[in-house]
Image (cartoon, rainbow, N blue to C red):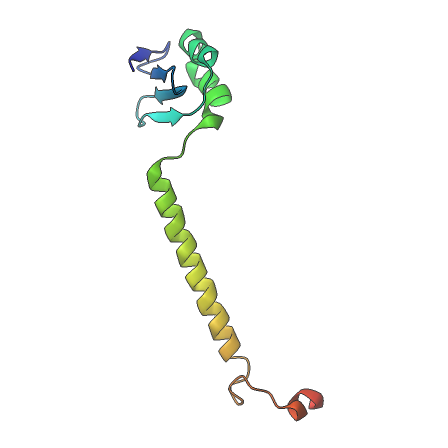
Length: 111
C-alpha cells in the first residue's frame, strides 16, 4: 500500500483495493483507517482541490475505531457499574437504620 499526496499541505492517503480500506494522514494527527470505501471515493479524494472538506463530508463517517478506545470504554463502563452498585447498596442499607432494612407489618400499616 503506497501513500499518495493529496492536494493539500502534506496530507496523504493510501488505499487497499482488496480490503477497500482507506488510510488518511493529515498533518499533526496519526493516520486514520476507514473501512469499505469504494474506489471512486479514494480517487475523488486524490483529485479534489479541498481534501479536508471532502474527507470530512464523505469519508470521516466510516472511520474505524482504534483498538485502544474499546479498552477505555470498557473501563469507564465497569467504573460506572461499580459506582451504581455501591450507590444502590448504600441507599438500600440507609433506608431505615433502626430496623436494619426489615419492616414489620405493623410498621407498614401505621404509616
